[in-house]
Length: 537
Image 1 (cartoon, rainbow, N blue to C red):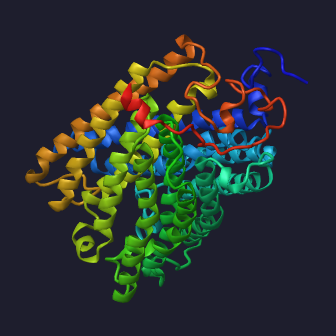
Image 2 (image 1 turned 135 degrees about the vertical axis):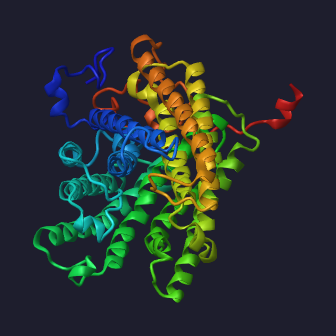
Image 3 (image 1 turned 180 degrees about the vertical axis):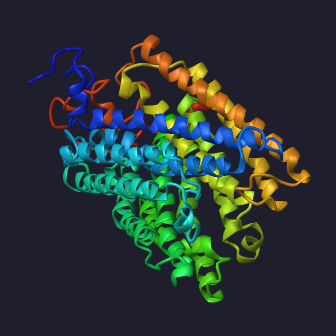
């Protein structure tokens, strides 16, 4: 039966209950999006407070203990509540069935259950804040996390619960991709965003239980006094590092692989050209997922592990850069000779290429044993991490929001203000973190509350950069909110995309498609550009 004119997933059912009990993947994706953006704002405020405190070496706004809690909360919220779920849970939930030509994900009720598990885990982290907070850093390193009097148990319980949401979402996506593709949609006709989500889901399912077990052991040690990680009770703190990073380095790819998928979509559509090396890009996502499990030890070069294993982990660190480089070269080759449109999403894609390349290359520096010994635990690591996570995942996430915002909301935003927001975000980010590379190379340790006078000027530059970055992000927020109330109605396919999500209505109807779509061509089969004709005119 055809849907009524003007009816879509947003207005098909009304009332708060229709949202709280929905099993529509699109509504669940929107609820995830609101939650993620709310926590992004909260974590951003904590980051601004950290940078404000470091404006001078003296006490500016908080004391040393509060400072420790601020950077811990910034890191924990950004990693566990924002970056890991940001793209898979929000954009992934919304887009995956649409791109596959399916009515929904394989397990709709499990999908809603995953969202409420996320909310339950987030509640534990919020409780940790209001009950005195915790100050271990987002990594919960032992033995400090087993001896501090702060709210470590509730915080680790929150991260433990959030892991179940991640696992269930991953299982749901893997099943959906295997079993619910439209007729004719072979593996070589899948959008690269779907390939990225597939590789991400495999990592989520396999790696997240390791973190869950590790956090359980940490809680058991604190509650029962059993010596597992604390050397005072016969435990081994380096064992905690092995367990933690065995999950947390694959988690880096849980964070960044979906961003790669977004960039592939944006660059291809805005270059009006078939992506260069489709199969290589698709399989490189799987290669990153596999090799990502083997490199955790490069976080521990200075922990006293054997020299031989250090060499092995150093080699594997360089190896994981190869499939990533395939993607970067593919994106550049796709743009070469393309009919490039500098839309707001394309601005973010180009920003991503610049920022993530810096993040990736500086990771190679840290993968070199002789260099890492000097740069370990300095601001160089902080800058590298932010260029990968913020310059990579978050920039891709915001670019993806711009790209699919018309499909999600049915509204067009102001291209001018979107580009202004991107400009200030890009400039502010580089001012903030390029200066931290210099700080780290000069020997400034990370997480310190105060510093020597020779570091003052660079800290001032970094703090001023954080204000510019915040301005760019608030302009972007204003741009989105303005579009909801004042934006023009979006056409069905504003970018001219060829994948299946652009075949449905904008916003999509409740069950995505009026009938079962049949796939006869690939998602990037744009007409060939006649360069000779273009030059002649």
